[in-house]
Image 1 (spheres, each protein chain N blue to C red):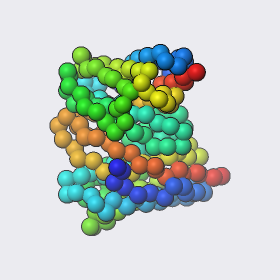
Image 2 (image 1 turned 180 degrees about the vertical axis):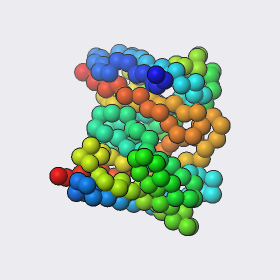
Image 3 (image 1 turned 90 degrees about the vertical axis):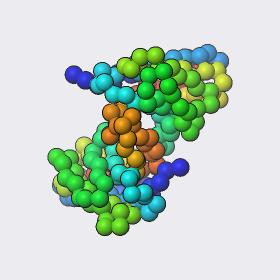
Image 4 (image 1 turned 135 degrees about the horizontal axis):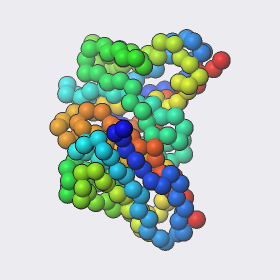
Length: 112
Length: 110
């Protein structure tokens, strides 16, 4: 079973920040939080991941609460091309690969 | 460029026929995975392999089979035992942290 809970859908105005929440209240100490997104009929695309510190890259920022039970993905200036389904996943990393278990994700619609 | 190649992009088969979906990666990743996606749904894990000549069942392995004879290749066979094979199939690989996904194969059984 998926170990994360996300709202099924969200809207965001173009140019504004999109804040996508995720609850992972049963996360273990060695599990990372990963975010992927999937544009219709394509393979999921990696966005960002983190363990307990906040992370930022060229695509997004990841804010993880101190108790690690929830996180927020922030797209600072959403564009129409950011319209996609966003998946929040928790996973243990080990040498030969962990198992990504996908939930239903959040369908983000960026509107002009 | 390194990546994962799934072929074909679209595949049509008659009911009762076995069909094999190809997945090849040149990323030198040890782990490879197969997922199934139905319309409006998330991805469900079919099979995964963490090393050559070894693989494990995922959550929905019934009606599917795989092999991992080479590090680069992880083909998926959809057998006639799979009751609802029409779906979007995604292959992925991982070096240990993070996945790289292929572009998918859309299988339609008529």
